Image (tube, rainbow over all chains, first blue to last red):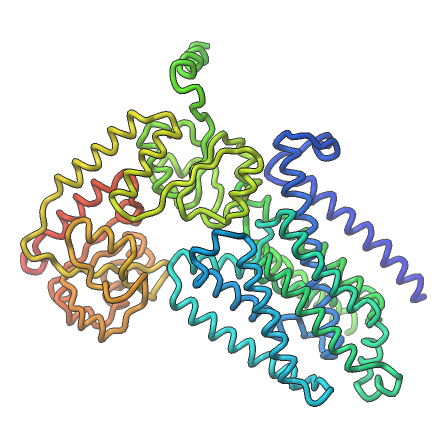
Amino acid sequence: MTLAKGSAFCVFLAILSGAVALISLRTGAVPISWREMVGGGDSVGSMVFQTMRVPRLLLGFLCGGALGLCGAAMQGLFRNPLADPALVGVSGGAALGAVAAIVLGGPFLSHSIYILPAAAFFGALAAAILVHVIATRGVRVDVPTLLLAGIAINAFAGAGIGWMIYGATDSQLRDFTFWSLGSLAGAGWDATLGCLPFVVVAAGLLAFRARALNALALGESNAWHLGVSIEGVKQAVLAATAFAVGAVTAFTGTIGFIGLVAPHLVRLAVGADHRLVLPGSFIIGGCLLCAADVIARTARAPAEIPVGIVVASLGAPFFLGLLLREKRARA
Amino acid sequence: MRKILGLLLLSTTLHAATPLRVVTVGGAVTETAFALGSGDVLVGVDTSSTFPEMARTLPQVGYQRALSAEGIASLRPDLVIVSANAGPPTALAHLAALKIPVLRLVAGDSLDGATTRVLQMGEALGREGEATKLVEKIASEVGARVPLAAHSPRVLFVMSLGQGSPMVAGRETAAAAMLELVGAQNAGNAIQGYKQFSREALVLLDPEIVVTTSRTLAANGGEANLAKLLPGLEITAAGRSGRLIVMDDLFLLGFGPRIGEAAQELATKLNEPSRRAER
């Protein structure tokens, strides 16, 4: 039963991601023929395909995937379906780093496109490390303290962002506003390849933790009695989130909701087994973001809508609808 | 047929490389293209391009700091002219990678900046003659503005992007540069950039005249409401005399081809006697 359900789900994921990839590669402001897609060459169409469409699809998939995966891991760690990667301060730290680079970086910012992502990434990392250190007692990470420290660090980052905004010029303010709406518009091979190692490391850290997260669902002491290395799981989840979510946020800005909703969709479909939830959330998260991005860059072409807006305005009603249907089914 | 022949003739007599499909990004950039007589080669503009009316009918490439390379490329331009504010850098780099020429105009909210940009665009659009004439026109307009009365008035520039929270223009703003150009004192010079101001500080500045933009006024529901958003204003000289000057955003602050006209109009309005004294 579970096995059949699991393999059916895998087939569904494969078809879904294939379809999303194909639609994403085929749609955009510039019409691109099949010949230009596969044949290469230096026409505008094939150049757009090679330098924008493909890296953008990959970045969207990496980014949505990382958010979905880390969201699932976070929800497992906190044993709470409301948890998302922002909870441990990563998003707040990244936003503070980004706004600091925009406001204080001024003349340096134009020298390299990596300065802003680097600042955002180190902001995210610093926030996550701080939260981690505060919540560590001896060798043990106390999960409730982790939650509270995350809230405090987010509030502190919010204050820092406030100071920066206060000192910002009009155009810096608008830059930050657009950064915080999230967008894949900056996607090129450099951003995609910049994210890749961090997402790979995160996936590697979480790859063999599914059973441990399943055990953790029974409570820390029960999991310990089952022989699970609880502290190992905690460290892995925190490190993976800091790396992957920090890196993708650095390149795309804050994109909310996917980290929360992707694991829910997977659990609604196949239940709470993390062996399916973790990889499933990665793929569903990636598909969600890429699909939203297709709308973001075509709905008002040749202009573009920040993808974060699309994700939230389509995703939230969809998610609510699912919850209502679930409620009715149970009643 | 005659039209095509005419075009062919034009393209051979004019510059060999006169661009025929141009995207302009920035309100003043679009305005300048029209002022130089190149309005008919524009195939796309950004959201800040609101003047002339014709510009509003062209395809929109979005907000100037959040451009999409693919979106612009889909208009198949042979030249993209952007203001110094345009971005993100990756979008501009992508356009360059597609071998679409991108001209980035110089920055600077000053008369010099405005005329340099006109000349830069004239060269790029193959309209050097028109550009030189436009620069001369701007210079004569700025020169012909009415001189302010012996005492240069303290002027408070107020702007809000949305509803409420009016911001005062400090140093290093387009508004401050415009006030300097016509020889008025910027009352907000103690601060840098656009900032919210405390009521008491506003009273202390005691501005004689308030200048704002028509968009600010429209967003805040007219003159009466604007006064309410600036509590304390009623105690100042400007509040008592009711001297409020309203001008279009892009016209007053764009530092584009109409900078000379804007300077003339602002100077004339600054010289008008107070309304209440008239009554």
